Image (spheres, rainbow, N blue to C red):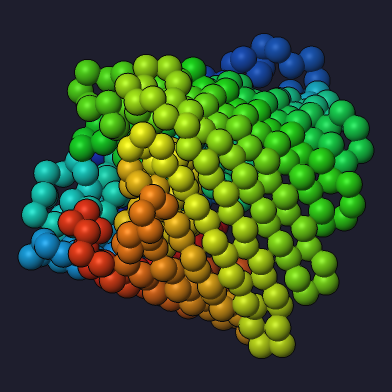
Length: 428
């Protein structure tokens, strides 16, 4: 299968030009495929194991993004032109076993007019899309009845991604190295348990201003009970023991070592939906802090004739100068698309928001307004307006125009920021 992905004797980049990363990418995939062939030939007594390869699939996925950032007090604006190229090889199932190999390449198109966290362009605002090629996923899956196990580098997504997600918005996806088991012991009950020893973060594949990965002992346990259709109650325990790294300050590593316990409820009735969440968090491992903070959220949505109306109120509390952390979350999805609060302020944060969204034919749109203030002392941090317009030209090609306008309230760490994105996505 790897041979079919090469044209002639030279591996080509996304626009036909030869590149070192493209050569590395295709050489890795070709070598992996050729290495597997003798094993299959030796182990096969029939067509079953060989069919894992012959009946497997190969997919290409390209996402181009132009991102503009104007952030006070920096005088220069950022303009990041990046392309993520993804190749996914998935085997067919044999005796419940299957595998996935996925490699990503992120390339800057044109000049580096942005701070990628690794390119040294510190005069520009940060656009956390560093260049590089890496294995995004390499996993073996086993399915038997109501049990599904996954070993290797994989995606782990819990609920709405508020605590555990893959940060799919950034060009380099967050994935996890470890073992995951999902089990349905009874009707309406799901148990999801993972042991993770390394987090492959969005700042990779090479260290820069942020660690490219976190090592440690991470336990993720979530149980969901669905007593009725479109009604679910989940309980979760997230135990994060992050190892220290001599190259980075504790705030970027061991300060994220936390124990979090909580519950979530999600329900939908006709044109109305409701989500509730409550959690508590304390320091763990080598975390130098000593605190216990609370999280809670309530949001609801109503489907109207022309649009959907949503309102929400989310609080990440604080204690002893430490804010409630969600270091494994898909953070871009919450507290505004300008990403001003990827780290929770020491006084915590309250986010009151409302949104309108809709879809007509091939178009979808969304508008969100946020008002932010600290949880302790109720100090205003600013407000934000987020806008999105998406267009699905075909089932495999889509365009998206998106913008975020953050208006700060004088806090030095949270100054005015405008961001605009134009994204084109092609799946083959």
